[in-house]
Image (cartoon, rainbow, N blue to C red; front, side, top):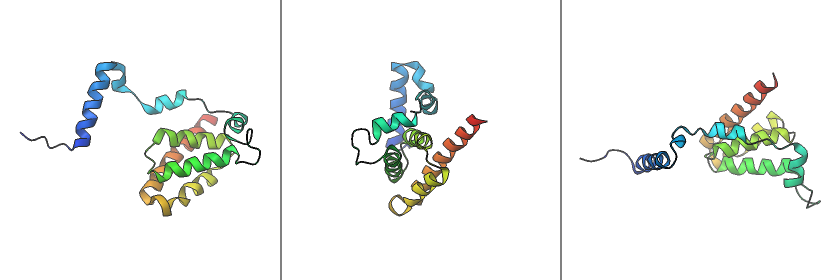
Length: 135
């Protein structure tokens, strides 16, 4: 009897079975819950780690984060956790919602509408969650 699933589905099933055998808790792993454990770096720390602290003539941390956002978007926004974390850090670095939306929209010519739509949806989720946290 032939298996009508595509190879990717079969591979995912095998990976899930392996993860469950290795650690049963992985069966219900939720990447969003993992993201919540990752702290948002304060703006000052980001500037030291990713900004002009070691290269006075270089890019500031906010600009570097925009470049990361553009790269993640052009990859098709498949790295969802990384994209959400980048948006969260951009907001902490002082980026506005408008700037984030424009940076994502700018990638339409390079990444295509589906990738930009997905990135925009993920970014909006983060911005909405952060708005809810402030209330």
